[in-house]
Image 1 (cartoon, rainbow, N blue to C red):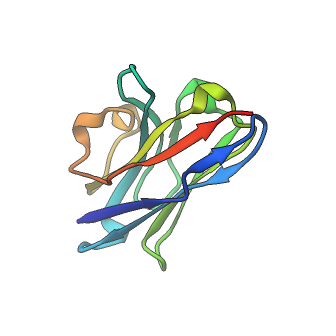
Image 2 (image 1 turned 60 degrees about the horizontal axis):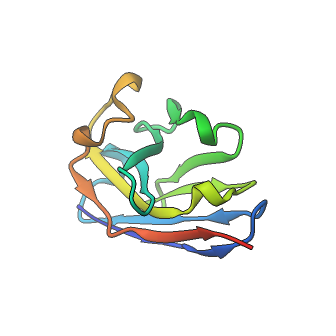
Image 3 (image 1 turned 60 degrees about the vertical axis):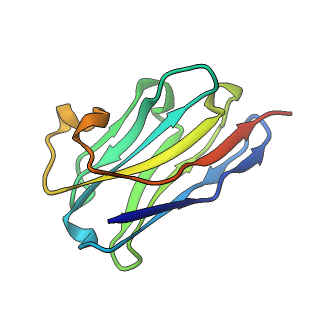
Length: 126
């Protein structure tokens, strides 16, 4: 499975951005999907994730109420819609995928994902 992320850029605080991650080379409907991010000088952290059918979702506390993750199986794409962006959201955002089911308590763990995209930079600054 290959993952390619799009949509990063510069946005002002309070603004919105929607990233996209397109998967190829596998059966998209069999993939559990997630977004992680890594800010300069910091460790990678989980952002959001969803299961095979897009019902069970995970969000880290700092993005709850601001970010929404969704999937479009017809387009082999997973999206995070990011609203009310803050400077602390500045990071390289990576999409990740694993084949098969995943229980909610494991969704935030980077080690359970088999494939990773190349990352897209999001900068929140005035």
